[in-house]
Image 1 (spheres, rainbow, N blue to C red):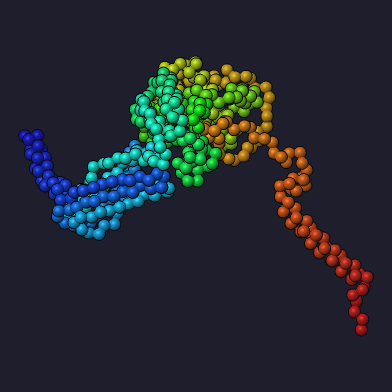
Image 2 (image 1 turned 45 degrees about the vertical axis):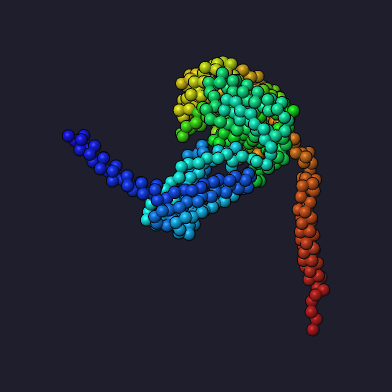
Length: 441
């Protein structure tokens, strides 16, 4: 009896709500809706709508990346009328989106009687139309290039699929969403697609949340193809395999896996790690979980250590343990708990076990603070160890002459003024003692 009563009440509510919904969808209608991208400067949105009842008085535009959980809301000014056409120009030099971003948008319209209509979600690709792109796609990887012909495109897609095979074998993950790779033929072309004021030395960029990779690679530069594509695809695959709203992957694991998968290996990194072990300069693994140091030399050592650690874990514990570890990261399991569950060791214990495979420390080198500059991009060659300061071995006077000649000039002027003042005082005192300034009647 109670069940029948509840069903009756629900039916009454549905019937009473239906006319309001029908009025809203029948009285307000979108005639046309467009989004016109003009990379890299703007996206222009336009809608034409009409109302068969009360005049339209309010409108909202909601837009954002299709893979984002949030949308930006824009209130548009409306001159009340039965039929309106509204525009909004988004300045993408301020609100930046990289080329290849899948965008979505919809409109919310209201009339003077309170009827409201939300248009269906529409999508478009924010594509860089300035270049005559060729395109190849396979297994959720879409590669764009505009120089080098079909042979270059074949090289790009071949390296990409080889990387996907390697990652599937090692961590048991594939791409479940498309990843777009834009290969610009020069760094200047590539930088024109990045956000304004991006640093000049950057060789590319990647957005795992958007599924976009941008790089500058000249056709024929196989070394860069085999370094950039595997590295960045590794980040994309791991990000998709472990995404969750609660936790991430340790940076050393993410970057270590990426540099490990490069077909073109960074030269000299094995020697760099061994020398750091001998000199007692290895960075604790726990310190590489959240970020890498800003100093270029320390950042390079961080990448090298991370690669060595990932390869050690693959050799000792095997791909099965790595796949289980990635599955644990996907459920937001903290690194300490994940390692304990999968291989029965804490972070510090794993670090200690790895260090036993390296040369024993035999000497110490004093740590000298490095320049506080940005770390080298993973798209650029590894930075060399900073050179000794050019002022080493000079006297303090020579260092002031070399580094701050203006300070030397000011100091000398100050000393001259003090000397003249003291000299004047001494002369006055001497004259007084000699009675030279005594007055006579």
